[in-house]
Image (cartoon, rainbow, N blue to C red; front, side, top):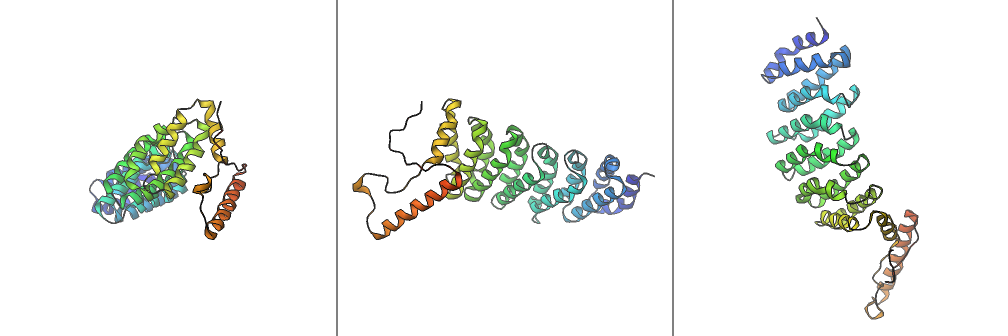
Length: 290
């Protein structure tokens, strides 16, 4: 008797008590995994699956069924991390159980585009969204494989950081972010996308409610330029510095507190530019781009 058949026989009764269809799903997956995992690995996989089954039968069924395809992208020792990600989406109710099950169903396709570390960040986004709307979280998880497949490899983790910031400050925009984000980003030259996403992430955290709109405006404005001009405009923008005294004399702030603020503004601006390794510059209106 093979190790897989022996394992199925040992756990068949327990699996049947948890869910009628589980023994057949388990048997099929175990047979497919035997060569890859070996005897010890197969036992460890069964332990993980059974533990999950006692918490959430739907999630366990999806995990067991998806494991052979997921192992095309994971090492056997990474299965525990992957299942922990799914567990985090299960908060005890039936809706969260279905969300966790969907996570495992789409897992193999997500792992085609995302590392396990990046997948962890996606779980944070989906989990945060689920506390607001289970339906929206489920839709975003369903659409995630096609979304990340549309993004270039180097854009995926920066985009996830941006999505996380949008979800934290304006969760109702996350569906637009997932639906439109890749197409909006495509207007920006590949070399400039990391900076735009970094800027959009900071804006989403600081300007609550407008992060996605600002991202769209910035990307579309850059997209309207000739491709070779985008880098020049971004390099110029990185040097810019602003303070409330950049105006006509009659409009400048007055008083001791304002003079103290002016020094603080200058010091912070200088620090930022030093950290970015760019020269500080305040525009005077004569700037042109050829």
